[in-house]
Length: 273
Ligand code: AMP
Image (cartoon, rainbow, N blue to C red; front, side, top):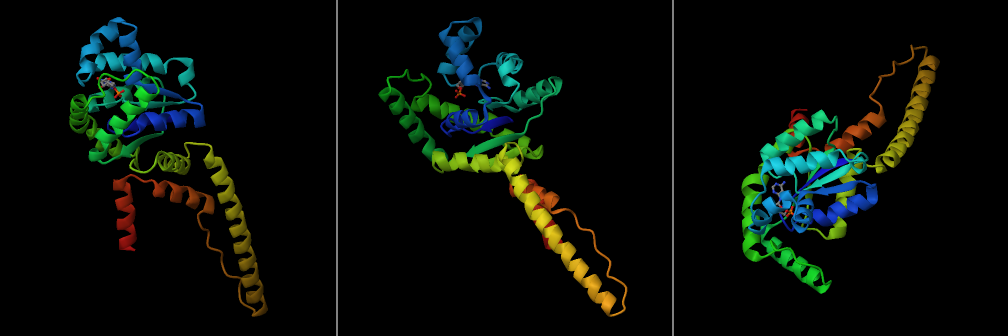
């Protein structure tokens, strides 16, 4: 499973990424975490990134793209990954497309956690209080002033990615204002619906069962009609071939999580009919 989690600071990306990691045995690739580790270890990258991060700015593209490229080559990323905090700009998304193409990796989906901005400051304040209570070191960029800057940067530079991935039919939007549990459930549901997680196998089994039951019922109906026609001395009615219920179930699942644009198309088609 290869995913991108998109959402402003405080939207719950980190929490949901950890849950996806545990459930699916994949790795979380957080550029923020990697950069914080580099700052702590005082590596050349860390030294370059330190002040930029403390001020809520963006670390130069070549640095973050380099970090991600190296990380994707490590064996633990082969089973799947969640990108958290990357890409953050359209040029980074374009660079990622190139990287994935070169490495023959296909992205399954981009999950956007949509939240009300007014709730974000409170959420980050809660995060800080919880970290303090656990005796953990608090991020130096988790202050109201820097958060305001990070939010402005999200709006101006990262939000255009919603359109970018929506156009590429990769975007799945989840209401990030629900409880953590409900958001997790919804993410798992949509990933199953697009066939990115194993639940699909279970769903398919159910669809197959329903399909064969339906086929059996249709067959019995046709046989009955043919018998009746024979009795009346008429030719047996022709059976109309329909698309399999398995395919119908699959397209139904995809339609349920279709990007807004595609969903509109479906509605239009229906209106025409
Ligand atoms: P995060 O943990 O995702 O909130 O990131 C913390 C900080 O790391 C950001 O405010 C940026 O300074 C830097 N950073 C993380 N990811 C990126 C990225 N993709 N591009 C540029 N800077 C980044």
